[in-house]
Image (cartoon, rainbow, N blue to C red; front, side, top):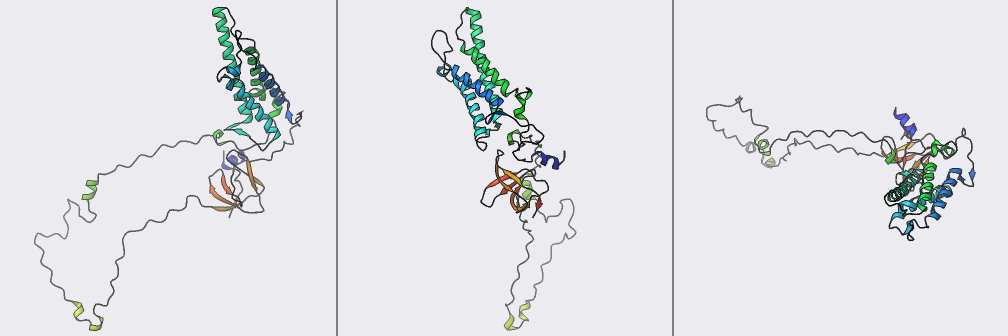
Length: 320
């Protein structure tokens, strides 16, 4: 797959229904699947206030923290589904999970909790012949399994799968993107000891090669050189400036900036989104946009008012 194809995968499209998809009808602003999920949750929420024990009153709300996974988490999921329809620009993710993904996890966990209670009740009845828990656990177990069907298996059911057709494509969360390949760390170069390195002089001759200028005779004393300043005019003696010898040390060149900002112009209107995919502002062909960092598959763009976002569609961008 080429880079252009990868860029097309991250293209942010307008939030409109595709023309080739039939319109979706529901109840008010909610789809049929969302209404069914709300109905299942409402019955389960009311039944949760009844006692799950036979001998004494003990609802799921009074059983330590059992209520959190049994009914509270599905309640949060249903409220997020309703909030998504009533406020499209509100909460759209729970961590790295979308609203539908979070609802699938919530009802699946709740179903496992109620099935665990049913399993313990049946096991206790087989051993003792008495039922320790009431009908509530059976009703809640069936309702949570219905919630799993409406969330996890909804894309496979013909009537419910219409809720997932024609949805606009948005960039995936960074936790849901393909992982990066891990490169092996390069091996370190062998290091010499400091004592050996200090004994080596760059001007010393090789130990086994005799110096061509070496002599067995003692060097003769150098003849004293004549003082040339004695022949110079009196008015010019000791008036020459000493010139500093050029240094042989080369100063290292300044390292280039890691992230060089530049101006970019896109051929059409494109959305600049934040880290979780929510559009922050738009850029178009009528004005240049300031890119403060090039990350390969995305640009970090700064708006005139100081807002910063990510442009994932970097195809056909003109650099200025």
